[in-house]
Length: 464
Image 1 (cartoon, helix red, strand yellow):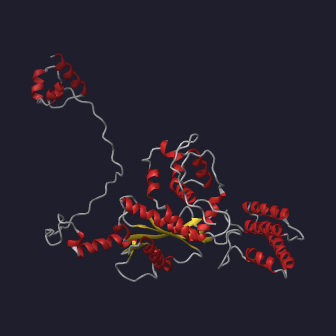
Image 2 (cartoon, helix red, strand yellow; image 1 turned 90 degrees about the vertical axis):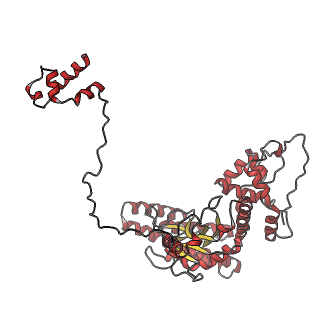
């Protein structure tokens, strides 16, 4: 049943404290809660409920928790735990009085995400509206976008043949117990031991023994598949319940390590694909491809995600560009003038216009070309245009600079200051020194001074 609308009493309570009396009403979460149109979000989510049954949880409470989770980067358990002791979280979700116990279950967040589905775009549209209203995002920032794809990793372990076969055996046994299908033998202990030994043999590079354990797992999985088909034959309800799991188990049993074409990488998440993005640290990632659209130039409030969508089946990037641009224009309500992409979008199916799509490495060169083509439009008034620039002087041929052999120059060592009297006497002619100091040797009189004579000269200058 449709959840009830959020209402506040506006009255005081003798035994409870009102949140607006104990918190700072200029806090960022308080201001954000006042700008979000909660009634519009409630009206958009209302068609997801039926007219009968128990009333659902208030829309503002669940949507507020989802927003707080992504704003602060918390998990489901973390946001529920912080909600209990944070009055600003409680005020953001619509509470009027301070609560000491979380009123719902943590699993309600998962159920809500599954219920929303594509309606999550409404939350993105509302966040963009709030940013535009606050001045953090301008209309001109929505005309030039950057489109790229990434991999949304799934919570699965690295897929190996032994792990997949063992997971298929466990999944079929679990489903058989749920529907009351009694199997001849579960092979649970045998499969667990074989999967463990297969991993050990592969680590020790004993591949013949490793293949023997894989044959054991494949044969046991085939026995379970045939046993379930015999027990469910002629029963439409059971055949429908076991159709997809049996198909996945058959695919896992028949696929090989280096085969071409379709492969399953997870028994419980068949949408997982093996995607290579050319990263040095992670050559292959297991997940679902996702498309992200952001504004090209930094807005006053920073970069904003204008559109996000998952792309199952790992399609080519260029084949998804037209749909992504159309959805972004529908979501923002602003026509896109330019879209900047990388070379993975070559051969795209979008509108073939030179002012619509540009590759990122050529973006700077394109801007310089357009600046030369239309200087009054691309330059400010105080900038010099190509008409009033001085003609460049002819460049004379110059010799190429020789590279210094010393790659790292020696650092200058600090020198102690020289005594001022020594500086004055140091530049006295040698003949004058010889007359003033007759004790100097003949080498000094000829124009050369030794270290001992210099010390003698300094001592005599200080004495005088």
